[in-house]
Image 1: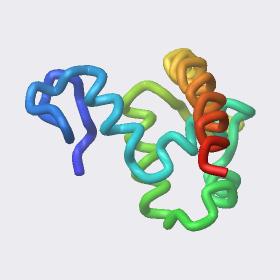
Image 2: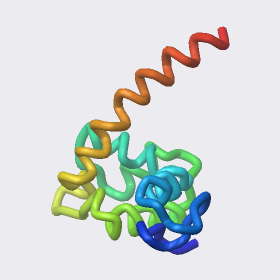
Image 3: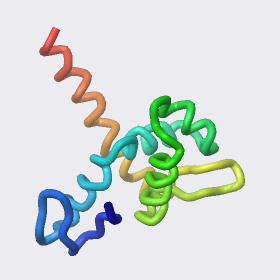
Image 4: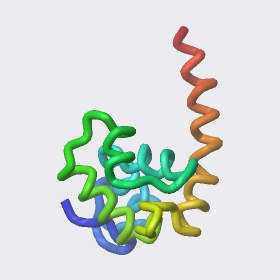
Length: 108
């Protein structure tokens, strides 16, 4: 699966609308989990692997590459960290996480 790029066809959109490219990227295994985890602090590959538990090293490497090429994370001397774009993305995702917890309460 190639990197979803706005303007190119992506899952759910032949025209590659930017929001659909973003949803394609974030819908991939562990992509949002990695962003969520890095919102707390930088992490090394091994720390991310421990956080993601069941992820294979190949999949984790691929997600890190995709998120780096998408300008949401970067590798530093302290490990992987969110870029400014990644921080803005998390600021948008965090309220959705709170909403989802409230929504989940409807199923109890």
